[in-house]
Structure formats: structure tokens, C-alpha cells
Image 1 (tube, rainbow, N blue to C red):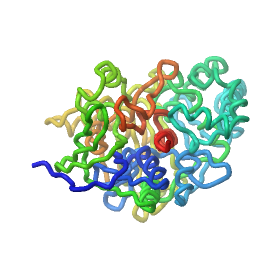
Image 2 (image 1 turned 180 degrees about the vertical axis):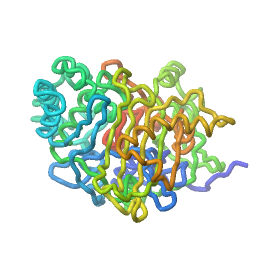
Image 3 (image 1 turned 180 degrees about the horizontal axis):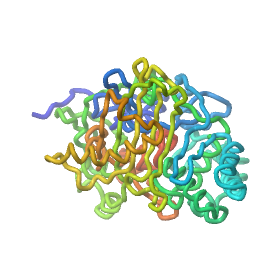
Length: 499
């Protein structure tokens, strides 16, 4: 039987508590809107949530962070929102940010670009370092133009033009010479300045970590911003892990009257005469609101939350045909830490230089955050999160599921063994996640991290939809994939709704 509410006080309902939804919710609640977030999972955070097993506190997704603490100027969109609502994070700074392990060499990656170039010169040769210097100089010129326009001021409608002219005219003038690069790929810049094949592969890895795509598919502004911020403020890890970021966003949201409902799975967005009227939860409860913001993926929003007739057929078909980044295999390990006193926290392992870095299983990311925050693991233990691309297709929970998990996880174990050779003998907890795990816990289409929209071949859609009152945020909207990007998507949407 359908349940209804006799009255509903919400101005805005947000579907999903990922970082995009939470940043939008914080800004809207701060500005006096009555906002409800409906989260399908038992814990908030979406792809950035954390979870605990046997005293180990694991991140489920992001592990590289930069610009999380208040500073002047603060250019991280996430931190700009936290500053506005009076929340902050404790962090641990570190450098190098990690070690990249290639078959040919192991390379330390420094936040400080001078040290980064020195490492390239030592590991490769001085000529490669000179090529990287020219490459970085071109991208940093774009960063220098972009950094004077704060994300917290941006929006996704025509009013962005008078806003920029009135408040940031000198920055716009500085940006004009950089406009050809704004829609270019990192690959275009790399092709102009970088010839060394090892260095090109290194840049591909850096882009892959940022966008899920190699340099040819990663937009130049995203990479330029990452490079500039990394060297300006360094890298850091939030004390308490990614869950600390989510907790700060939830505190800020609730401080200004917002309400978060967990275990509140949204089954349908109601549309009448091309206008949003509200949602229906899985338990049958109907909640009315004139504005709904979906933090679900483009595929889940348009294929499951809406009826086919709610959208123009051609628009819906084109949206659903958007290519998705592959899903992932995950290892979450708890290990004994005796004898690992000099362990470092981030590693990337490329198994085969002859294969593309986007080949499933070839590029493996490893995070050991208990190196920075010992409270994430029991005493005398470390936790490890390792992950690699893995297609969703072909996975099903049949009689072979368990053995296939073990087989597919082997490339991750081998990657971790590059860092901790006896890791299997140290195991006290071993969790393997598959694309099915991703799809189940994150409620995401095929367990993906977002659209694979290559630079120069298309743009991420804005927060707008053809339905009045329905908006979208998250990694399938502008600016795209990554913590700063999805935080910016929430800002763009909230500012657009400000009027």
C-alpha cells in the first residue's frame, strides 16, 4: 500500500549523499532552504564513504587529497564549502605524495615541482626533466589564469557572465590568452612538449588517477589545477579518512536545518506536465517538493528514477548511450605491521609497459592510510586499500563467483607485493570487492565511477535537465570525476538555484 505524508516541508529533495549532493545541500541549507537528503545506503558518502571491519577503518574510494585545510586563498571547492558553513578538517601533510612502480624503474612523485623534475632527471635523464618543465610551464600558465576565479562563485546559467564581469574582470582578461587550452586535452599539450616514452606514460598515469582516462582523454584545466594546487599547498590526508570529510559535510548541513535520511532508497521521481512534484521511496512513502536534485549517475537517474516518457526520447537515448568508466576490483586488507617502520602511504604499480595503463588489472593503485593516521587500524597493524579497473560485463553471483574473485584479485596482490613482499603472510583481514560489490553498495550503474567523456570529444552535461525542477550533480555532470570536481558540481547547481 502506498504511504503518503499529510504535509511536506521540503523546498528541495536531494537523492544521494555523495560529495556532489552534500556540497549542494550545505550551500542550499546555509541560504535558508529546507533541504532533505535521501540516502539509499546505511551510511552517507556515496563513493567516498568509509566503513569498518574488525577495527580497521577503510576508505571505499578516493585516497589522494589536496587543499583540505583553510588557507588564503583557498582554491579547493570542497574546502570553500566547509569554510562557509564553519567546518574544518584535521589533516596530515606528506611528501612525496607516492611512488610509481614501473617495470623499468621506481619513481618518487613529489608535490614540489622542482623536486619532481629532479626525480625525473635522476630516474630518466636531464632531457626528460626539461621536457617535463616545458609541459608543466604551459599548464601552470592556465592554472595561474583559473585560480583567481573561485569555484564558490560559479553557476550553470547565463548569470555566470555578469557575475564574472562584475567581480572577476581582471581574471577574465588574464584567461583570454588561455582559452584555446580550456577545451584541450592534456594529451595535446604532452604531444607538443614531451617525447620521452617513459615520461609520456608517467603523465598518462597521473591523468588516469585524476580522471580515469589517459592524457588524451583528460581535460587540460583539470590537470592544470591539480598540478598547480599540488605544488602550491602540497598533499594531505584527512585524519579519520574519507569518512571525516563526509562527517564534516553532514555536520555543516544539519547545522543549518538540513535533514539526512539513511536507508531511504528512492524508487521514483514524480513528474507531472514536465515539472517535478516529488519522489517515492522504496517503502512507499511519497515526499513532495518543487525541486529534486539527483546525485545518482546519469544512467540511474534517467533509466530507473524517471519513466521513459518523462524525457524527450532523443535526449534520453543520447544520455543513456554515454560511455562509462569501467568498474573496479578492490582489495581491503588488514595486516600485521611489525618491521614496516619505513612504509609509505601511496603507491601505483604498472605491471606491463607494453599495455595501455587503462587495461584492466595493469595499473593498480595502493593506499596505506594508517601510515598517516594510526587510529585507522588496531595497534601494531596497517590497513591497505588496493584497486584496479575491472569491467562489469560478465560478472554474476554464480557457482564460480568466489573463485573468480580470487583470480581477478591476484594482480592486486602482486602489486602490493612490490611494496610489502610478505603481505600474504601478514594478513589478518582480507576483503575482495568486485564490480557487483560496487554496484550493490554504491547503487551505481554497473559499478562505474562516472562517464568516460574524452576531452575534445564532448563535454560533461550541466546540472540542468529538460524537466523543470529536476537537476543533477556528481561525477556525471560538469566538471566531471574526482573529489574537487564533484564538489564543484554541487556548487554550480546550488548557485544556479539561488536565482
